[in-house]
Length: 296
Image (tube, rainbow, N blue to C red; front, side, top):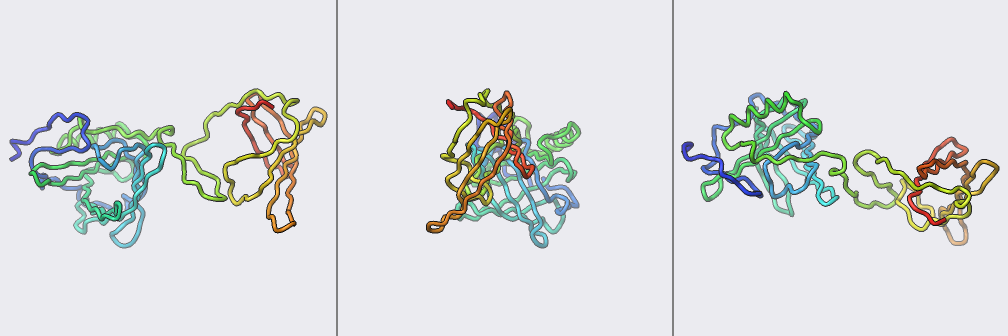
């Protein structure tokens, strides 16, 4: 009975198990608008989940067909982006229930997510409950935002619903970081495709470069991939020309027998105090290279 329900003190739990079976009186919001719910949601806080050990968790709902939508959940763990794709079907009665299905290691997993609160444009509170064989209930809950944080007004509305919902308690929620350094991951390597890293470029400073000692030939030994570029034998020759530093870049593209298609480009170079080589090509294109280390 409800009189026996209480919130136990749990020490670093993997899941939240509470006394008594799930409360059938807990329902999602009425007149749920599945179309307005589409798009990306950032996780701000969550109940512990064994399948969510990472950070930077996000969910993207996109229109599939009819009442069923595609859903992709992602998280960053150990600098790897882990994602899982499934489908979600909104209940026909508009009660704010999403029937979600995922395939995890060739095993179909289904669950019902109840949207307890949302304004569709900024916040959402999601709830899940499963009655276990031992008569206990396993509860999940997620606080979501269209941005990486929740406004004060959104927090107040979510907290009011949490306080009024049996099985939800602020003590069980864990914060999910959406900070750039935490969300950084190393993408999978793809041939002839430049790697795209999440977040903005950091303020990287190089060493102070002595232009007089930097002149001469430099031969590329290894590189990050570039979009569509498959050149080899890449070298650069830096020369002083009066007060200007010039560079000639060479590479070989398409080696067919004894026929090599050589590519040569020239540029003027300026060097900043932070070790940035700014190459301005005759085409007007600009490339900046940061020298992190050299013994000349």
